[in-house]
Length: 310
Image (cartoon, rainbow, N blue to C red; front, side):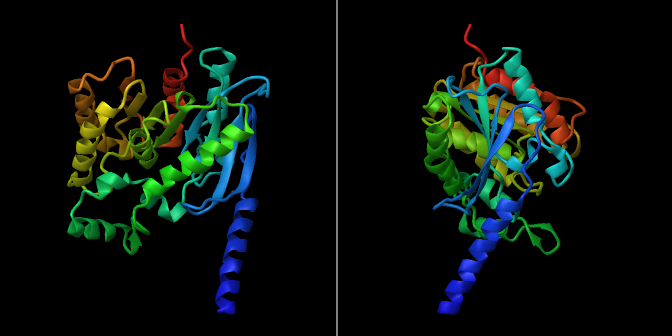
């Protein structure tokens, strides 16, 4: 028993140590503060990177953008593919030009191998039959590499953001408290968890940015997951009131899977007459599924979400 406890403690120490030694991204605009470790009672603990814009001051109040896949946002030198969203450059430029309300960014790293299990919308997943769920859990990204490394737990991930991350940020930074000042953002699977987070917690967030949303859910071509997403959105959209949603996609590499699916999503918004001032869907021909592509157009959803009141 003692050996088991010691082994467990060793794993915790190693895990926290690896978090502490991850390179802090370098930014050219503003600064980053790392909260590490950020312990959670709901999911695997990780760090948070909090980006503060140039001139950040305790005398001012800022809105907050909570972004998924937090390792990919600021510094190409620290990412797995040497690409980045250029969040600091794009955000700072918009703020400095007075095109948006000032905001900070809370970058939440994904769960690595468990990313698919953490981001796949859980309530829609649970609508599958038990046999279909079993089949889904057997899907492989490549031979011998399961797509889902654990059971889908995105509801716990969202609860982690709402009940652990948000209270910490609102207690430690000069931000506007309240749902009308909080936004979610992500791409690909991060796009899925962003709209799902908004629809699961419509009273906690003011908007969701969903870039190159991975509507297929998996890498299969049967569109089974998409139909579940579509039905869920049809059912939940009436629960939204003033919330904003932004969708976009290209048509190259993985984004080639999205145009026809996004059209069906757009049709739901049109049929339910969701206010056109509160949602946007944009197509970027020739753009692919990459951080470089998202960086090019990031200013568009940021201006849409954080537009100054006229």
